[in-house]
Length: 114
Length: 110
Image 1 (cartoon, one colour):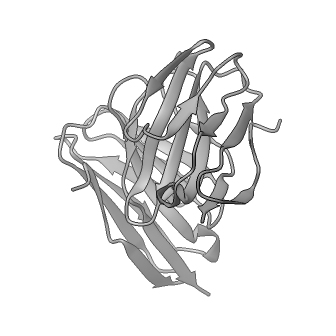
Image 2 (spheres, helix red, strand yellow):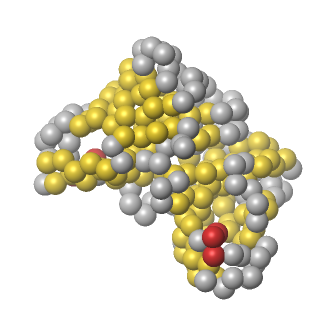
Image 3 (cartoon, chains in turn purple, brown):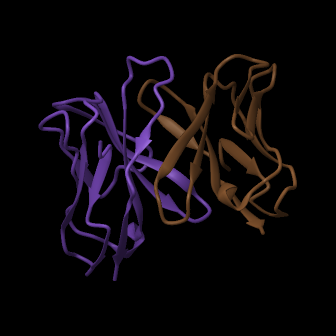
């Protein structure tokens, strides 16, 4: 099984442009998450979704939006990119009915905003 | 400051040596996760600890959660180059909210 896939692998984006990072999981997990990983700051939660049709804000939601139209897909949109959004973005999913509720991570999208 | 502090930030060891990575929380931990991240890749789940005093092992990696549930250690015995990567501890702060430490970069010299 593929687990979680993310696209694109990397992207260079001009400031002010919009972009959508794609994330798809095939594990039928109810919960999905978007994180950004920055040197010295670790992983920080941007947005999450506990089930299709429902989303919530994480620690650093400003400048980002998400949607969860179905169980498998959880796209992250930057409406007007700024250089501070240069980061590596990870999508993750988990089954919150399981006792461990561990997260499964995608390979990441490296985004550079110039 | 980080709610989860990891030490050391980086570590270089000779192959075959043992090593320990620590994760300290400013709050009581209700579930502590250890993940490994290979450079340029996503995180891979290693193990989870829930009870104070709990200890788990997977191959040559052992993790412990102290009795007070505010500190965890990850111990690697007889390290190998395949152990190289970034080790992150994580904790739940609600059903859907997780926090992570900044990671420990491990390099194993052959």
